[in-house]
Structure formats: C-alpha cells, structure tokens
Image (tube, rainbow, N blue to C red; front, side, top):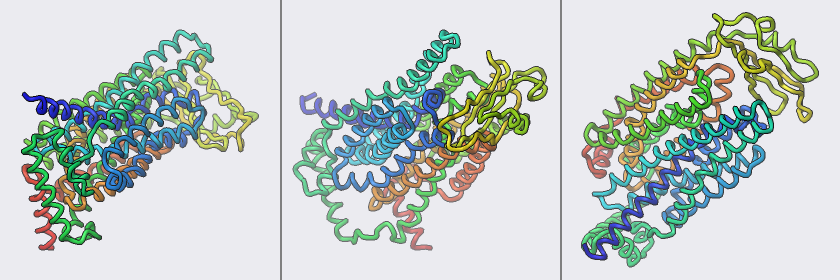
Amino acid sequence: MSANARNRVLYGRFLLFIAGLGGLLYGIDVGIIAAALLYLNKTINLSIEQTSLLVAAVLGGGTVSSLVAGFFADWFGRKKMMIVSGFMFVVSVGLIVVSQGFVSLFVGRLLQGMSGGVIAVVVPLYLAECLSSKRRGSGTAIFQFMLTFGIVVAALTGFFYTRQAEAAITAAAGNQELIRLAQNHAWRGMFLSVIYPGIIFFLGSFFLSETPRWLIRRGKVDAARAALLRSVSPEEAEIEMREMQALILENKKEQTSGSLFKRKYVWPFLLACIILSLNQTTGINSVMAYLVIILKQAGMTASHATQGDVVVKVLNCVMTIIGVALVDRKGRKFLLNLGTAGIVIAFLAGGIVFHSFESQKRDVLSRVQTSVANNALTIPINESTLGPAENGRPMALTVLYSTGSGNKVATVLSNDPVPVLTIPADTTATSPLVIKRAQYGPVPTETTGWLITICLALFITSYSFGPGVVVWLMLSELMPTRIRAMGMGIALLLNQGISTLIAGVFLPVVGNYGYFAMFFFWAGCTTLYFLTSAFLVPETKGKSLEEIEMYFERNSVKA
C-alpha cells in the first residue's frame, strides 16, 4: 500500500471516529440525567416542575438548535458547526457541575441539549456528504451505534457513582452532613466524568476537512477536490467531482424558492414528519431519562434500579446492532411494524403491573391535613395514624405538597429507621403549606420491580431494532434531495418538541395519576404509529434515493 493510500485509510478511520464521538455525546445528553435524579433534588431545592424542566431542557435545547442547525450548516459549513457543538457540550458540563441552584442547572442542561440538536443534524449531513456510496451505510450505522453506546456509557457512569454514594451513605450511619456530601458528589461526578469525550470531539473536529459538496456549492472547486483526495483515490475524486458539478448545473435550471411546497414533495415531507413525531410518542427519551426513577418506584432499591438501568440500555445497544444487520435484509416496513407492535405489548403489560399496586393506595389526605401545624407537617407512619398495613407488608406514605414555589413530593416507608414523614416550616415560602395529595399503600416488592424491568426490556428491544434503526434511515430516504436539509430541520423540530413536551409533563402526570397512566398513554400513541406504518409507509428496501423520489412523484401526479 502506498503512503497516500495509507493516509486515506487513516483519515477515513479518524473521520468515522470523530463522527462516532458525536453520536456518543448525543446519547450521553439523553441518558446522563437518569441516575443523577436520585440525588439532584436532595442537595438542591427543586420542585417537581423544576425537576421535569431539567429533564426536558436537553430536549428543548435540541428543539431550538435543530431548527437552525441546518441553516447555519449551509451558511458556515458542516465542520464549523461540529466544532461549535463540541464547544457547547464542554461548556454545558462545566456549568452544570458548578451549579448551586435551578437557574444555572437549567441553562447548563439547555446548552447541553442545543449541542445535541446540532450534532443530530450536522453529523449525519457531514457523513452523507463525505462518505462514498459504498461506505455511507456503515458510516450512518456507526453514528447510530455510538448514540446507543453513549446511553450505555451514561448508565454505567450512573451505576458507578450510585454504588459509591450508597456505600458512603451506609457508612455515614445517619450523619446528615456526610450523607449530603455523598449525594452531592454523586450527581456532580456523573456529569463531570463525561466531559472528556466532549473535549476530544471538540478538538478532533478542527482536523477534519469541510465536506466537498458544501465547498463546491460555494464555488471552492480546488478545496473540494483536496477534501475528496483525503479519503478517495484521484480517479474516484474526479468521478465524484464531475457528478457534483453536473448536479449543481441541473439544480440551477429549477427555481429553488418554495421547493418544499411543490406537490411532489408535500406527501413525502408530511409522512416523514408524521413518522418522526410518532417516534417520540413512544416515550423513548422520557423512558431513558426517568428509567432509574421508574424502577425505584416499582419497588427496587437505588442500587438495583441503576443495575436495571444498565441492563436495559446495554440491551438497547445490542439490539441496535441486530437491527442494523436486519434492516437491509428484512426491510424497513417489516422492522417498523414488528417493533411498534412489540412496544404496544410492553407498555400495556407495564401499565397493568403498575396499576395492580398503585390501585391499592388509599387516600389519607384528611388524616395528613389534621397533622399540619404552624406551617409544618410531622406524622408517624403507623397503623394508629394511617390505618392497618396490607398483609403485613411495608407501607409507604407519599405526600404531594406546595408552599407557593411549585409542587414537591415527600415519601416515607413504614420500615425506615425513623418512620416519620416531616416537612419543616419554610421561612422563605410565599404561601402556607398546602397538602394537595396524600396516599398510603403497600410498597412494591423487588419482584414487581423486575417485572417492570422485563416490560421495559421488551420495549427497548422492540424500539431498538424497529423504530430506533428505521426512523433515521427512513427520514433520509423519504426526504427528496432538494428539500432534505430544510425538511430534516423541520421534522427534527417536531420530533424534539414532542419529546420535550412529554418529558416536561411526566412527573406532574405520574404524581397526580400514577405511572400506569403514562404507560397506557404511550401504548395508545404507539398503536397509532403501528397503523401509520402498516397502511401509509412504503417499503424502501433495495431502492435508490432517485427511485423513491420517483415513486412519490408518480403518486402525486395520480392524485
């Protein structure tokens, strides 16, 4: 192998490595909050609404940035926007780690989401425009795999720091100052540990070339040729140069203004938007973010909940690999139908399990309200104050309350060392203590927790090899070439907006109605997803982008 050929191979691997790190960061953005929620509101005073906003902020930031990322990528270039996204990620982690209150935490999470939104738009664009047709599929698969691997990295990070924290809390033997220090170190350590891949992505992006297709559209023919020569042979470079120049001449013959609203583009654009929107109504991002909290609510200890978190997210990574291997053999439509059907079954089963023990809770609001005195609450958790236990099982009292700065939740178990629920008087409160909801019921067993883990494992298995792999591929395939950049930005805006909304209402909904309500809601939405896939989505396996575009064009003419 000649020196030039060896350099091309090395550069190609470096390009995929940096692009893969982009996927890793996007996955970390989604997953890192899951275990941190165990300790975050124990060291920083947060209401339910504020906690939900911290989860939704990443998705909201992605919504904002995905809307403008395509525009700025066309203006400044793909490479520069990758550098910007890496810089935003590093700064966001630093801001989160030093935060002492809600505002700085929210801004840090919002910036982290904006970084992820830019990555989600720009890195796939960069890969599509840099890689040859032979390598484009593998390049996209690497990005998708690294995204799921990033979620696993976040889960493993959470598991590591949770084990440390729980050991330190046990060793503290009730010393509240030491317990608080352990909790504080745990969530800050989780975020700080993921700054290193962000730094590598940020610095590595400087050494990439701009995409030849962006350069040639800017009239930089020599620079485009030089960029191509870094990854392909001179002969292949000249062939691609001729094809790109011919396409530019063809595009100049058409009016570019309003192309998104041409009749032949409307249906594939709308279908892609519908698919991407329904993809979020499966609850995927909310499940990933709240997974540890969901498992803990189902009866698991903090350590076992983080173990379940790791199991589900490793399964996500493994099944994504299987999905990538099957998508060209079995077809997009087949995997999408099978995956959405599995998700419906998983959520229905999980909703039934949650309802089986959530329905056993008794309303004890009046009893708890009588214990409020001087704007504070102290109530022992025993049979004389709250009634008899269920078959001798440990009982839990959960109280939803407010002091004027948002709703908060306090929970105490009857088998705690000190089974007394205490809400001290808040001298900074803007209104009196108001008890909004109080429920008393049996604590779910570890078996129940593992049943929910199995349901979520079925969910993530179905999602990973179905919608998880298919949706991004179908997005690029359904969108015609002329509207792909703008169309992807709008579709991603809808995707992130719906994801943000669901994550933002999750804790208030489960606080008022129970976890089964969210599970049944996701099952209903995914049923609609299945019907859309079964009756409206065409099979695109084995078809070129031009053939798919012609299919929609013929249908628009018939209509």
